[in-house]
Image (cartoon, rainbow, N blue to C red):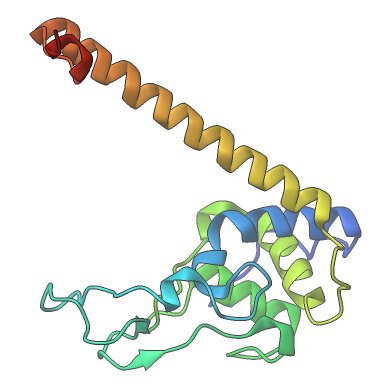
Length: 173
């Protein structure tokens, strides 16, 4: 039985913002940006862990190979109960036969922040977290630019070592 290390964090807007940030980082691939259960993983072809082959249809599959859908959190109906402690336990331990991972290592305070956020999804007005979302998008773009810069630097180092470049203009005369 999962027992939180601390009592529930007070349900404040600040707590929900922290929860939203975690949700954007860890949960949107399945639950989607708005929590409707329509993340990108629901549209991608997934690999069957047992066979190594792709499933014939896009979407998520449980441990037995049956198609599953992530919970639509906007409805306020949750697997395993709707009390805050029920959500805490699902987030902390994950849901084993499904693809929902455990997040126990995130820590009790973070998990409570996510609980506070998830419990408010059905009631939040559109635009409630606009600043958080914009900050997240900027950080994703910056991370992508850093990866691209690092890849370009690595490619440049390879070119210096081998003397091979991809510039076609030097071949024309």
